[in-house]
Amino acid sequence: MNVANFLNAVQTIANRIKYYKKDSGGLTPDGGCDCIGLVKEAYQLAGGRWSCGTGTNASARNIMQSLQPIAGGQLREGMVVYKYRVPGEPSWALPDAYRGDKDQNDYYHIGVVMTAHPLQIIHCTTVPGGVKLDSAVGSWKVCGFLKGVDGGMTPPITPQEGWIAVDYCREIWAANGGNVNMRSGPGKNYAAVRQLKVGTQVEVRYECNADWAQIYADGLDGFVMREFLKVPENTQTAFEPSEPIQTAETETAANLYTGKTQMEQTGTDVDMLAYIRESLSILIEQIDAKLHG
Image (cartoon, rainbow, N blue to C red; front, side):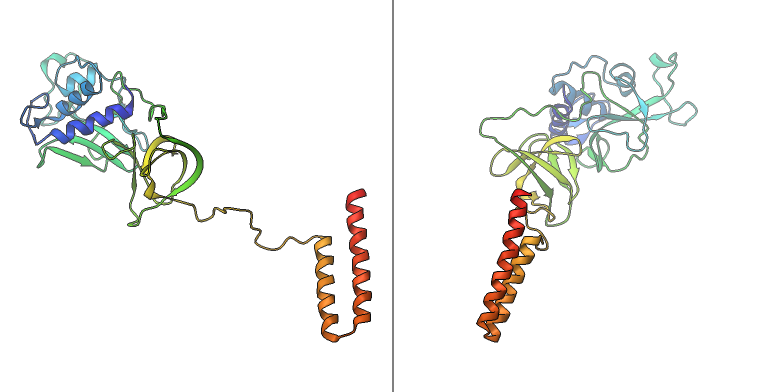
């Protein structure tokens, strides 16, 4: 499955959760869930086969592509993150099934990175409504992709009927100056794969409809509402030199016109005609040199 599909499924399951229910292992009919239940249900909804039980220790050891300590800038959309305790900590409670493992970490909580910039980690926990978004790494310690989840940022975009192919640049804009969601599809029901800061330059590739456009920004393909796109301030719609371009020809013509005006003001017709003849002669010579030189 791709990251976008997984994140859409995570958001769908999160919307169904009503409260935190310890050791539920999944979503109950009345909306109860625990942390591993959120991830397991989303993984299955996105088409994955969950075959490692319902514990966070089981998932960390059996369904991860790999686990790495969280370092600055490493987190990516679609990764899962874990909190763990080490032997000797008061709450360390590694299940007996794993006491013989080389890895003695007790992985007790799991979340999903919904966006990396800014950071948003969604997890099911003991808060009203059962779902919380973390905006800082805090006590999250390791990260990685689940097996079967493509670590690519977003899937290739397949144009739909009615989309208009375009190719122009725009700038992210919002009246309140806040970040703008870039989503995995053209609608608010799709997951946000990134939040774009005001002023971010983007490439617009498709106009999906009157409200949505498909864009490329920060290495990602995604969709934003067209009301948040504006023409960059430094973009010129046509070539407009800031100052007149001076060449020998234009300078001579300008002098000719200036001289003619001056002569008309003095009323000396003979001098004026002589000036015009001389200027025209110079101009013709310059043009001829350009053509045959």
